[in-house]
Image 1 (tube, rainbow, N blue to C red):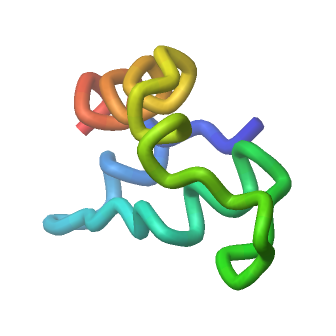
Image 2 (cartoon, rainbow, N blue to C red; image 1 turned 180 degrees about the horizontal axis):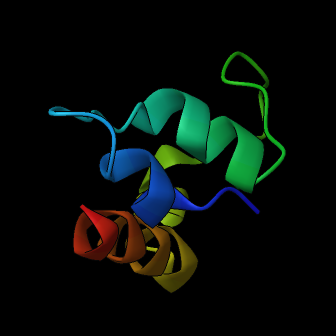
Length: 57
């Protein structure tokens, strides 16, 4: 797993690419028919990961 805290020690700015984050976290293709955006944005794992990135910054 990538160490976000180490990255934020050497940069002044960070951005979370949520489309890519969701695609890789849930192994989903954004154009597939089984991509339920509402279900995914309510998943606690997504929010825990975002919170850990924010905390590292």
